Length: 375
Image (cartoon, rainbow, N blue to C red):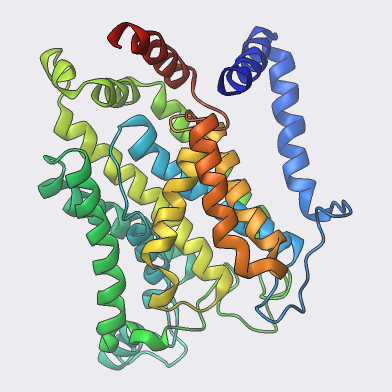
């Protein structure tokens, strides 16, 4: 079954790459237009969501927004895991830092904003504009990635994974315990969007209609896909792949492993920070319980299930693992069981992921050939 799926995806990929450039451009444009039209599309059974369910529900456009945010997360984590080969189990920490950046500096309910108002004699309605919170979130996440990576990237394998898992938990616990800064477990509300704090005057980016939020998140995703793709095909991207394959051999060839791994952590953290900012702005309220370790494991699962090292694959994994739990909320008590069974089946029959990268598929094929000889 694994070889059959791999053959099908490989044939589709070869056929796509053989198309003339103008045909691929038309296909890309049609695909992007379809993605923007999705919130307005009604497909029986696919776009139906119960909004009156006891445990809460979501609308079709709201689910699409969450899918777009998680796709952005998966792309950022793919830089760390799929390209550089670094197992990061604490990626939720960067996600939380991005969310708290816009909450702490953009919300009038934030203790930080209230302190600035009193200290400098500003009005009670003053807060940092939403647009100004974007570079703050990116910078805070990147600095956190560098601070985490500087002492820990000399570790490898399971040791690095354990350290990063601890980082994610540290961020959550600090946000919970520093009540004088983050409001602790009570959380922070009135988080602004592009039109300011949530109110009846927000005709576009309000709390009721999630379609503009989806279009905003999708635009950010497309921009980041373009930038990461350019980076992947650059000298930095080739260095990441060399480090992932064999760090010692890469060092012999002149690749500075520590520097490029630090770059991967910083860039991945920046994408996580942007994702957190979008999520917090749409929700209008955040608290530490929203950023637990289980969410970080889910992020890693999106990359592994979709196909580590392939942006199309990790995007597909993110959409699948975001859409299905929302679609089947009425059987919420079985969702974790179904999720575990699905992961087990994917790892058994499609270990390279749903849409593997060509390089990763060749690696697994070579290992399958070597296995009988070693036996």
